[in-house]
Image (tube, rainbow, N blue to C red):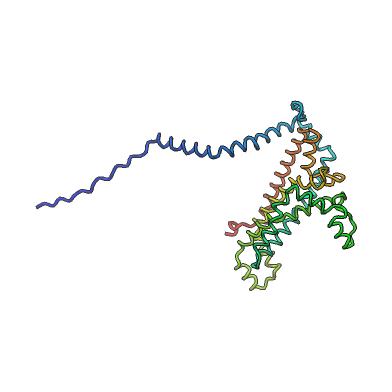
Length: 318
């Protein structure tokens, strides 16, 4: 008798999906994606890209909000460079950035180093130090700050008790800018939290090995902590520098909407506001806005160029 081996059943034939069906499915997915993105796209076009394009056009025109723009080319920029008050605003802003940003970052890093150590009530201290960053930009805090640094207020009385008779800072052109610096330094909570997150990522084994080798606290900070958190430090420097160039609310409120006294708090954005909305020179104000954008872009480019010398990433060490 002959045995016949049963042949395996034929596998079901898999037919490739029609290209037309795949195309329709891809179109439906793309359409759904664009529908979800449409609020952001509309907001970007109407609230960001559109106003930027309009301000770029106005920067080359004579426009006062009441008459039609008149093309004048680079006259606004030429007039700007010969304006003594514009030069004063650049000087005041540069002074504020150079003094306020490093002090704020130093205080943020110092407090972050203290909070990185395990101790009781750590969560409370973190929240307490971060709180000024949430309320510091409000108008009400600006009024409170102005009252604190006025004549015969708490700061003036404290200075007199310590033997420094300088009077209120708000009314003194030599000191009023430092009240704004004190306000921005007081809002060190945001960079502090970022520093704290970076410090938590530093391996403890590095500190233990350095301590075995006899390295002291300063040596460990300089050779371990700073190189390990250098990317976080670069991020904070970049963010806080850009933020300092845009100061407006605190200077406007503390100076009682005068940007004074004697233009001592005439930061760049305050003068831009005066030109655009008080003197109705919107073309000149638009030119100022684009000069500020170019200045911030230049500073950002310099910071990115310099990071190759002092910022250390893990990829570079491999």
